[in-house]
Length: 158
Image (cartoon, rainbow, N blue to C red; front, side, top):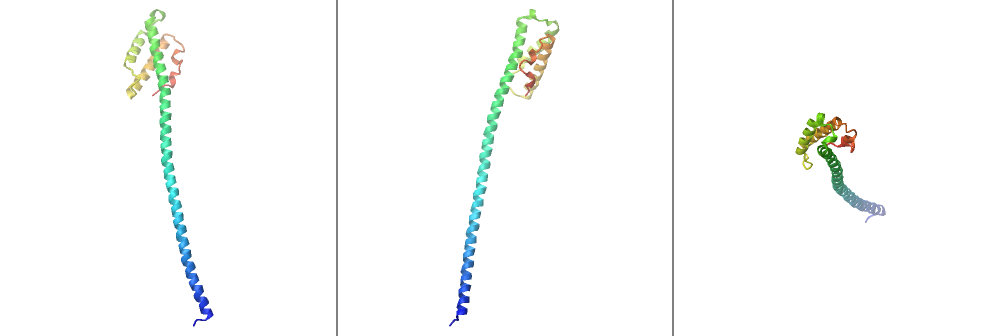
C-alpha cells in the first residue's frame, strides 16, 4: 500500500504531466492562432498591394488622358494660329512687306502641308519644332510683334 507521501508524489507527478500536456496543447493552439493571424495579415497586405496597384494604374491613365487632352488642345490652338496667320498673309498680301519674308512664308506653308496632328512620332515632333521656328522667323520678318507668343507656344513640345 502506498503511503500518503508516495500518493502525494504520484498525484503531483500526474498533475505535473497533465499540466505539461495541457501547456503544450495551449502553446500549440496559440502558435496555430498566431500562424493564422500572420497568414491573414500577409494575405491582407498582398490584397492591399494589388488594390493599390490597380487604383494607381487607373489614376495614372486618368491623369494621362487629361494631360493629353490639355496638350492636344494647346497644340491644336497653336497650329490653328500658325495656319491662320499664313492664310491672313496670303489673303491680304498688300498689308505685308513680303519681299523679305516670301521665302520663309513658302517654306512654312510647305512644312504645314506635311504636318499632321494625328501622328505623334519623332518625325512629327521634329517637323513641329521646325514649323514653330519658321513661324517665329516669319513673325519677326513681318514685324508681327507678340503674335508668336500669344498662346504660350514656348510651352508646347512633344
